[in-house]
Image (cartoon, rainbow over all chains, first blue to last red; front, top):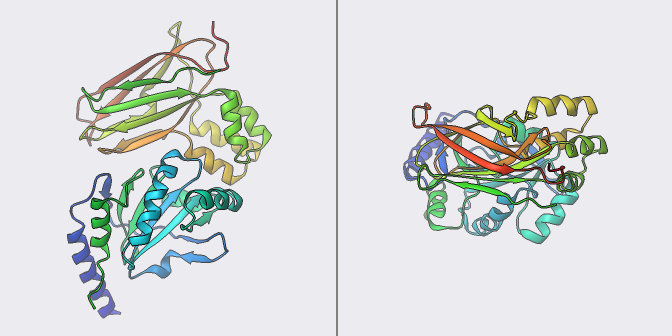
Length: 171
Length: 167
């Protein structure tokens, strides 16, 4: 356990140094523990944030009726294809039905998968500043960064930020 | 009935952009009906004037969105009353509106208070008791992390609620 904690601390030091220069619209958070997040996707498969400890997680809240969310989704879909494998992407749809989400994603971003916060209560616990909102949870399960509104995740500064969080291991 | 949107672009002076677009009852009904809101909720929503606001802080400092410092005033100088989140939460409770609908409604409203960071956008509706004529918005914004900066005042004239009788 001690060895694992030491390794996590080392990983956090390295990645936070690499992510010190933040791209526009990202702010540092105070490192409080991330709220619980355990939801199912359109296929009924459950994701539990607690089980993703040990890696960085990008938690993205969105809804199909939200214009900035719709504009941002193609960039997220492109980023998801090239993001570091060690960075997990967890998308959370806020308070829509599975039919609405299925029809929307199929036409706009068919490669993306999302969890369903059917009654919106998980989103309420996370208290995003609005939709869309993207949090970065560190390998210890703490909130480290927040993206304000939609961001061009597939562009240079944002790609470099994501790679800095979860650098690929050398073979 | 379409009423032109109003934009106050104060980029040159203060670096903020404020855009308002009043919605007709038909637009509001269509949006919330499509998201499964019950009829009792739709009825209440269509008796309200919703003004969609988009705001972008393009300055290099914190700008404070505080709806308590926004005044909507009619042609006779009378205040146009706002329906805040507490009003809606109480109404949804009374009408037994499902949690999913309450959550969606909440995310479609402009926050009551927000310390907008540089480059941060925010958008949402402001709910008003429908005035019968034209009205204006006087919005005041504190600036700086501790509100120590110069106050920004934005005035948008000649607003009206689409679908309401204009005198």
